[in-house]
Image (cartoon, rainbow, N blue to C red; front, side):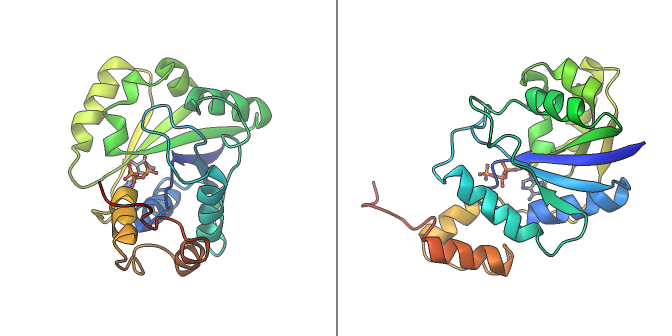
Length: 203
Ligand code: ATP
């Protein structure tokens, strides 16, 4: 069966951690494609200041020259919080011949049992976990296996990259370089749109 990976996140902005994860999963799990799914309103973290259209455009620029990677507007075009289960319901109904795999970093896995309708999520999709420095992927996987014995869980090793969007935002606000941490087109977009520049006085 055709299998497509879905990689949800705020991508504020997208960085090499996301891209390396997507490419390693694509190859290791022999997926047809990995599709980034930027959230409009993340249910599990604070709403980003950066407009959803800018976050989407940066992902679009990042995947433009990377075969096998794509981006979806499915969550941007839906009102309300971007629940994964709703995204999977929507996509599964439209792509009956496809098995989906939801990709998430080890940090996200720890909170997975608190997501909306996790039972339903694991019935719609396999879960693929990518390692992330500072988080114990085995602990998270054991917890999910205990709670959801029917879940299909895979783990993918990748170079452990200790990089996060929050760190990038802080670097950009301080006028520091991110040139090796985001694709060149994304860096140019950030500069041209004046994203992440510090506004107002520091508190
Ligand atoms: P922030 O710092 O704003 O919280 P983030 O860098 O964690 O952002 P998200 O957009 O929240 O990025 O992450 C989307 C997905 O990518 C999540 O599943 C997250 O676990 C995963 N991810 C993010 N950074 C890395 C990384 N360096 N290595 C592996 N996975 C990552």
